[in-house]
Amino acid sequence: MSESKPQVSRRDFLKKMASGSAVAATATAAPGMAISAARPKRYAMVIDTRRCIGCQACSVACKTENDVPLGETRSWVEYIEKGEFPNVRRSFLPRLCNQCEKPQCVAVCPTGATYKRQEDGIVVVDSDVCIGCKYCIQACPYGMRYINPKTGTADKCDFCLHRVQNGIVPSCVNTCQGRARIFGDLNDPDSEVSKLIATNATTVLRPEMGTEPMVYYIDADHADQRDAAKQGIYIRIETNRRQKERV
Ligand code: SF4
Ligand code: SF4
Image (cartoon, rainbow, N blue to C red):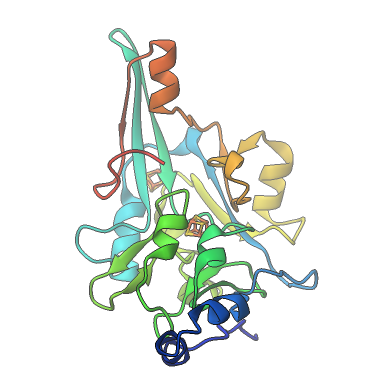
């Protein structure tokens, strides 16, 4: 299976920066945005929030599987409390990188370190090429990225690429006892994800951003603190430690 490679190495980029041609480097670093129609797979996740019990087993599995540094998260579950006693509802919203079809993180990366794999649509970071400039962290509308303190480079969920390449589902999917997380190939009409999307009303996070997320939710509460405040509804959202406000 071939892999779409970044077009500018970290060394080349730093050389160009030194010679004052970083803008040219940015312009030539077309980071794999054009997705071939012949791409064999288009991996996606469906999260059926009706089946999520907020146990955070997926969050723990992700941290262990990917050796995620203390204080950072690649995948987590938000707790959303809405209303006031006795009319209170708590719901759960698992979050992870959306592996967007039009990823803003990729569009801003000046070195091509972040790119979307043409063969399966997974958005990855090449830590050998990343210069830790944090442009992608600023650009992601979902707050899904962080700088890995061990490498000094950007990091995020990649659908457990090392597992998927070996035919195994992502660790969060494997761990979820309620089968709230379902992973598969949207290019296969017989896959479970394709069937779930065809037969259920689904939503994505922040569709107005035009990123076309590949993580679909069934029956999700996308409650926003600002919208709730406008309607006079009490709402409390517990998100991960790094995010001050839900995005
Ligand atoms: S493991 Fe499954 S049920 Fe538990 S929090 Fe994660 S998505 Fe929800
Ligand atoms: S969710 Fe953020 S980090 Fe993930 S692909 Fe989309 S823009 Fe990039």
